[in-house]
Amino acid sequence: MYDSRDDCNAIIKKETNTLIHGCKNTKIPSSVTRIGERAFWDCSELTSIEIPSSVTRIGYGAFDGCSGLTSITVEAGSAMYDSRDNSNALIETKTNTLILGCKSTKIPSSVTSIGSAAFQFCEGLTSITIPEGVTSIGESAFEGCSGLTSIEIPSSVTSIGNYAFVDCIGLKDVYYTGTQEQWNAISFGNGGDASDVFVIYDEDLDENISIPFTLHCNSSESAPSASPSPKPSEQPSVAPSATPSEKPSAAPSAAPSVTPSEQPSAKPSAAPSKTPEADVPAAGTTLKEKTGREYKVTKSDSSKGKPSVTITKLSAKDKKAKKVTIPKTVTVDNVEYQVTGIAAKAFKNSKKLQSIVIPDTITEIGAGSFEGCKNLKSVTIGKNVTSIGKNAFKNCKNLKKITVKSIKLKKVGKGALTGINRKCVIKVPKKKLKSYKSLFKGKGQKKSVKIK
Image 1 (cartoon, helix red, strand yellow):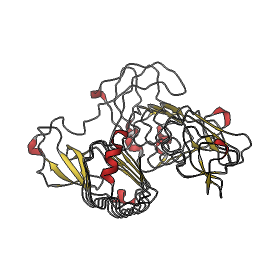
Image 2 (tube, helix red, strand yellow):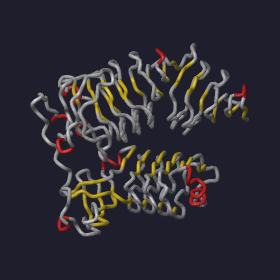
Image 3 (cartoon, helix red, strand yellow):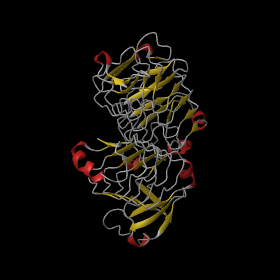
Image 4 (spheres, helix red, strand yellow):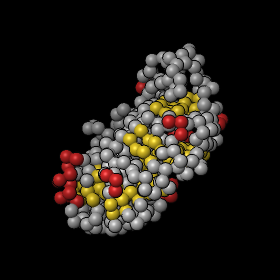
């Protein structure tokens, strides 16, 4: 059935010559024709990979989580892939689509598309220039690139996929080489609405102007105020950063043409710094956000931090989305609340949902909250979750990846993992591996489900 031919430090399925599991020391043999799904999943110590010319297919998520990659090369003579111009990238030759990048990638000028998840979770990536000629940026292309601080997008781009820049929490500077009118004409997917982005347009850029701005990557978290850093492709000098109180409006349509004597108008605060207790509804009150999401107030006393809410009902847009990122805070009637919980059955039977990111403000995942989400494939659980309710992920038959960041988890309810995919991998903090293996034991999952 399997072998590890040529001292390759990998597991290969003989019948199909498919490499199904590799490690940091793997050298892919020239007899391999396929690299399987998640073959190098979460191999953060992998620093370089050479794809032999014999490989004709690379499976979904084959290199997901390989955050240490600095070198990607394809052997000359491949009919399917290349790494042209010493780009340190994997490119699909026929379509000129970059399908895998790393922190040292330089995108060649001949590339016309950035593929889905091409740089996903590449935390070491700090800046990137997308060359003129690229027309599309795929779904989740730069998702989770937390170290990314600046990016240059050419005027040739006409579409940006769902969640292309979601959770890029360090992203401060977006340079667009076209005009505001061209930017507004771009087709944006979910999580990339142009109205949430304040962009520095090429027509307005002056190297001596300080332009503080806010960039919303996922409608839940914004980068700090900052003056523009040098373009990734240039090195202009810039004026000092403005103070947070000088933030302008985030909408591109309001982007000013600034002169050195002017400063953009201040961005209004989403909520008063201290909300009078009388203005906060009592605990148990149902609130409805502009998006259509509904919340229930769980703490109304604002004397000890922000009042808090639990998300109870999705919006119509959420129900149609493949990926949902729960916001850390929500503002209703000029009162800002911290979102700390997911109510029982809040996402139940959301048939289109494929991915969910649970932020660090959440402490509790309610009973049956994701039950019956049959297309759900990946879940990221934030750092402060303490409990997962019974049947929380019941019958999520395609759920293959659960990333637990919390070291505070104390309770996992009965049947929480019943019916999840038999190939699911649950990644937990290393120092909690032993205790979490015990905590997740017997929650309805198949024995083949791995916790590591």
